[in-house]
Length: 302
Image 1 (cartoon, helix red, strand yellow):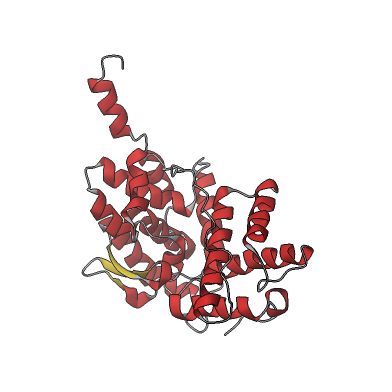
Image 2 (cartoon, rainbow, N blue to C red):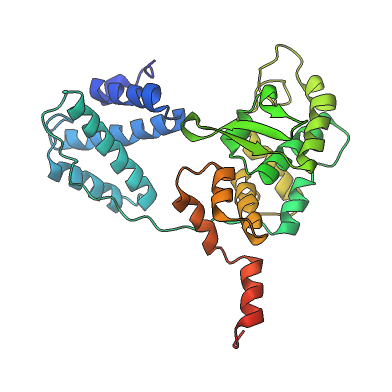
């Protein structure tokens, strides 16, 4: 189903391309919305040059990207915008909707390798244990934090969990990652205990009306969303004096602490659900405590 109201801004070519991404590629709603914004900017830019998507030339696309760069767009935003443009024209040519592909020779900007910010082990422990005990929200928050840190889930994966996805006996869960790829992830002892308490003592008290069908619910008994999760984690982090307490920081901490403990990169890749080992390799560049200890032990000038 096409997103209502946006067709007039971008046109049928963009609508068909985004529908293909949604139906055939399984792209997320966030990705599709971002691509639509990127392509709407291109349509508007081409209009200033009295061109359309169908009549655009390579120099028009180069000028568009240069205008975005001069406007302060980050390399990551530029790369995503270029991916949207390339994908659109590749789709148009293959579908027989366009005669030419003016994006064929555009070069991808090199993205800087940004190191993820991981929490120290004491800080991660303090955050996870911060909810305490005694009320449904605290039990829910403890279970969510234990899963974020103990299983390395993305925020979208955690809020998308259903009760049937979790098996406390085998201590395994099934989550759905990017492009709806499924993977099985172990549940640690601490997370198992927190989940058991949440399922037995908290969730039944939070769900007041119709069951929303997801594992984690908000105070009104409705499905907890990513923004709600973000606010909860930030609140708990501030409560223990942490500035870097975001859901993704716990995922980064999960990976970093596994590698510090001697886990191999391929195993961490599987646990994180990375399709490309190159995405996981960024963790090998972290200045972890283990690396610092090795340096101080063996380097003559340390």
